[in-house]
Image (tube, rainbow over all chains, first blue to last red):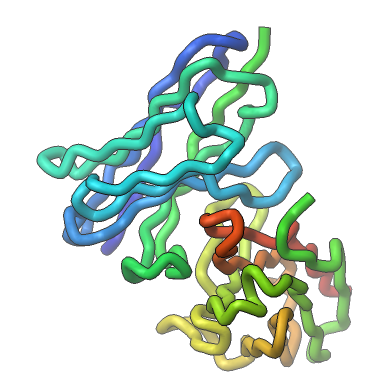
Length: 121
Length: 111
């Protein structure tokens, strides 16, 4: 069965960096575009970034552009999110999610449980 | 402020029918992009409930249905059950922002 397991969250000071990981299993990782979606405490869902199935295309939300970098390692079936220059408003649970197909409006058919990132001094 | 607009809350008694609306604009739903719906129980990951406006993934009961018209979409739940109490989110794509967008979520309370 499809499984997505995030790790790497924690408490970090403003301006510092953190790298999140998402271990994928139960499907052909190299065939699917992958996304990061975050949810601030008590708030709704916010799309963060996507990477195409082969890693050739990457897109970011304006709120993280220039600070976050999405990447993937097909040999390890793992998705990453490197977060630099963290701000208090980046505090959220970060979910990785798989899309059903490669269309820009594709639904997220599987989600990880998420990893909490808290940016605080 | 979410790009897609949902009512913050809705409620209904067991067995009743409720609808959750999702209002968009000409750059997302109105541009023809599909709408998807997710259910999120407290402390858990969102789960795909309806995809491509009106399709149910395997395992989702037919009590759940979706529709889309113009710049808005709706999720209907019939035969309301206690376990339906959750947060519901709509999602689409916005061509002006060039990204996936979500509604702010609707909290369903089963009375």
